[in-house]
Amino acid sequence: MSTVSTDHDTMKYDDVMAVFEPVIGLETHVELGTNSKMFCSCPTAFGAEPNTQVCPVCLGMPGSLPVVNRMAVESTIRMGLALNCSIAPWCRFARKNYFYPDMPKDYQISQYDEPLCFDGYLDVLVDTDDGPRLFRVEIERVHMEEDTGKLTHAGGATGRIHGADYSLVDYNRAGIPLIEIVTKPIAGTGALAPAVAKAYVTELRDLMRSLEVSDVRMEEGSLRCDVNVSLNRPGDEWGTRSETKNVNSLRSVERAVHSEIERQGALLESGGRVIQETRHFHEDTGRSTSGRSKEQAEDYRYFPEPDLVPVAASAEWIEELRGTLPELPSLKRARLQLEWGIGEHELATIVNAGALELVESAVAAGVTPDAARKWWTGELLRVANDREVELADLPVTSAQIRRVEALVADGSLNDKLARQVFDGIISGEGDVDDVIAGRGLAIVSDDSSLIAAIDEALAAQPDVADKIRGGKVQAAGAIVGAVMKATRGQADAAKVRALLLERLGVVE
Ligand code: ADP
Ligand code: MG
Ligand code: ZN
Image 1 (cartoon, rainbow, N blue to C red):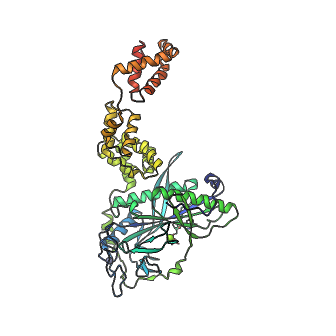
Image 2: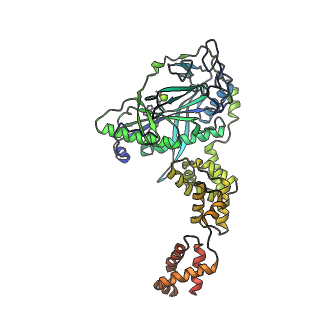
């Protein structure tokens, strides 16, 4: 793997926050889950042989004409409604002109000054040290456009165009419907800016999944974010923003905001000026490098697309679509909180861990809400962070959590052993029972071996033994601890304690 050296200094995050206020803005592109492309009937399935899902329209052949995909318009309107937007009664597509081989027409059909949906908002909850805080993220616009083809730069070390010997192009993706959701500038988050950005994209993803407009497979690149960041001193006007392109995971959204704040802080503190440019985020270093200086809208020579009729959604159609909106994630969370009997803070922890769906499916599989929450936001989250993967990508199933929970409940495992079971599953040692057998994990429950261990511990700490005999029951902890250590954690601590007190003839 290539390592990309950074071209900039950074300043510690907290030091930046002591001097500056951040403003962020997010542009999110999502591939819609329609069966056919935006302006032709080519299929959209992921992973086909390159250039097999193409036709004269999406290859930009002379004389071919686009036709709008009704499903894509419906999905965009439903998304707009869910984001509390106004829906334009009449709007047009626009040509965005540029020459680059990823678009065979030499222009992209998009929307410009007449987006289909505009002026909405999305409320997001961010977990803070002082409990959950609600932020209202205002939505500027939601519009439709088509995706570009995919370029693969071969022969170089970095996979990028610089240093490559040649480039390959796959037009299967060209023309897949996208929606772009653009926020208004988000100010007033202070140091929580990275967390707000992540919470917003998470909420957006969940919203799209609940509407079934996209299944948002991030690992396939079906959701991409451009992250805008600027800094200003309190009381000053907003600063110049940079735009970090194609940030492809929830975790990266948070990291990209964080690192850009550190970069701009250092730059501004040393008397420099932020230039309006695009930057590229590098997963491996968590930092970005400069891309190109930002082109202006004029550069694209936008004009209304002459080959397409305007989209004019009637009020009845919009109301009909409103009627198809499912339970939205924010309401669903309120319901789950009641059903699971948990507090707002606990729910925020689940949501912020990106674990809501995982906990839900565990509960649906028969795990108690408490156990599902405990494992997904505790040990499993820790492992995911350690391994720098998304929680949902851990190879742990609801059925496995249920099995572990049952074994803990009947005393065959304790929490410590249960953690080892998950470690084994994640390390590919098989299912729950395979790991238990393979690692020899079982609570030592036979009394005689526990009593032997207790006697040994008492002999090693006679003074403690005397204290307990003399009625200082609190001192029992030291002996229980020694027995747990001797059995490498494979004993039930409560049982050891009971046996110990019985052995010393102490009644509590
Ligand atoms: P462009 O096409 O140039 O990227 P857009 O209007 O599509 O412009 O998106 C710009 C994004 O940057 C929006 O999300 C907007 O809210 C955000 N933004 C605008 N000004 C600032 C600023 N000063 N600091 C941070 N973000 C900003
Ligand atoms: Mg942009
Ligand atoms: Zn086509």
